[in-house]
Amino acid sequence: MKYTEEMILHSESGYCMPFEEPQGKEVELSLGYGEQTDPVTGEKFFHHGIDFNVRCYTLWAVASGIVSGVGNDPVLGICQTIRYDRYEVTYGHLSNVFAHFGQRLKAGQTVALSGDKLHIGVRFKDEELNPLEFLTMLYGNIRAVRQAGGREAFTFPDMEMTLKTDYEKDKREIEELMLRFLPHYMEDLQHGAYRLPEHTEQSLRHIFTMGAMKEYFYENMPSMANPLGLGYKAMPLACKVQNLLIADFLHYLALRHDVYLSTMGGDVKKNFMTKP
Image 1 (cartoon, rainbow, N blue to C red):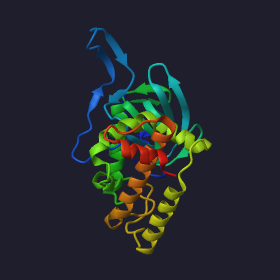
Image 2: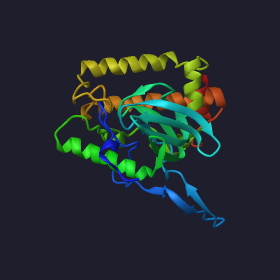
Image 3: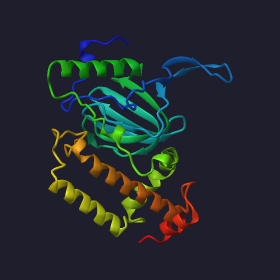
Image 4: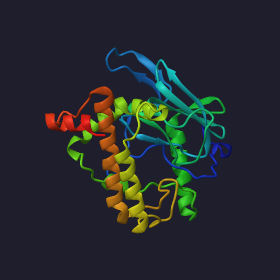
């Protein structure tokens, strides 16, 4: 399919790419669109999309749209489809979905979390097309808006890449635990099966109160990616929040699933189990 003028996506909230790699790392396909050869059996098959090896990545809406489908597919696993004008973009192999059927979205809004990999499929007016062409068009829109000096191009701050928590040595293991248990954690919070400990709530309130007093907020122009306008001055605040949330997730694992980090000693485990 060749792109024509009518196929250019228009979005009131701007544009962004579906995910972002860490700084310095290139985005790489693990499986392309079209006819492929199975590396094990040697059989040929047609792949109706593209895949990326992005494990447990936050996924965003790429423009103004609406969630038109959420399901569990035999091939794609947990999947989510979002309609952008006449386009429908499907994310597959998800570990969690945060935007639900019928929800209206803006560019940059968090919609899902990838699983072991990410599949992206694209259709225009119900005709399948190579997602790389769609992503190329999307990137062209972003560049055009930036060059025109407009504010529609959605960009992401690199603060997340420089945040250091108290759990750096266990980062890989914690990410694996999140991939497995985060959906249960969110569901238990939503249904009241697990409640945030009172001391954690109080600590979060105190952190944000102190942040406001020290004018950490609105250092930068607020945006959907950074609604509080946090800048580098707020790094200590952001790190404290990260530490609290990770600690609570580990507390939940101990309390509800009897699961601990492999580096935890016996005394630390007892402390987790007896925390209020």
